[in-house]
Length: 356
Image (cartoon, rainbow, N blue to C red):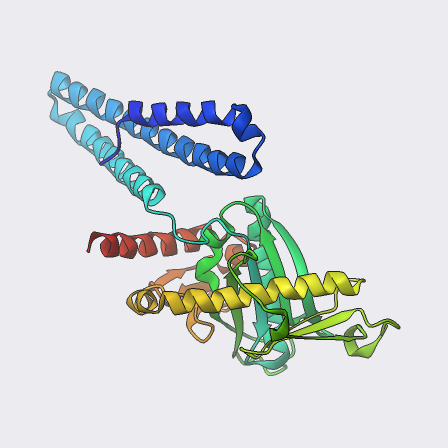
């Protein structure tokens, strides 16, 4: 049931007053906190106002139906009423989605890792296409992408690319993208015209704050080496590249894309912290993962989540059984339909769990 509109507006008014106070304006943390609350309340008020408008339209149509009392117009009015009901149900769904308790890290920036898996050069080419897909999606959302590390191939693919995505609610939108992405098509390097199947793994990890991940200096093995381009060309004279190994877990991160050793070290540490936080999230939510994996999964790197079939212009998300025949649009970064369907299913499961 939607909250009273007046109650929402009063909450919004209180937040606006807080945002204009000297106490909040002089405190960056409070400013960020109340700005987020203001944005969320504004969304809820917009949904409520749209819902109230539909109710008014519904009442007017019901009144018109009674006044006309004519079978000729009754069918047309009933059809309009049905359309209004569907719009109301969609608004209720959006409202419930917005009022679900926020999960940890939903609003965090992310570190994404895209790696070529099975399929050789074709896999590397598809990894590059997935990077372009996510880059276009990020641009459409007003997010920023910053490449941390990359290993390009001679034909324009990527063996691996690691990058940071910053913006509003990045993890909330991209959290379902972790897993194995499978491509089916005739590779550019295939002369006989046979369709090949290749795979690429994607990992989406919420960016970690230092307070959330404790790393002891003695647990790190830090090595430096000379950075070089593809094929060993343009090798630098100074050892600016950095390799960091987290001894307790064996996780190794290398970064050589920046010109200075300090910058490469900072970037490698950022990736390492994200990977360690990702491990902790999966440990703490192990039981929750098991509950949800039967539906949309929780981003295990080994989980096959999606197939991109180029000959059929088809994209299938295996977690929710969704098939779309607009592969070209999706590869251009139009992911809203895919992600919104995953979000709906995910939120349905969360509501069931919270009701238990």
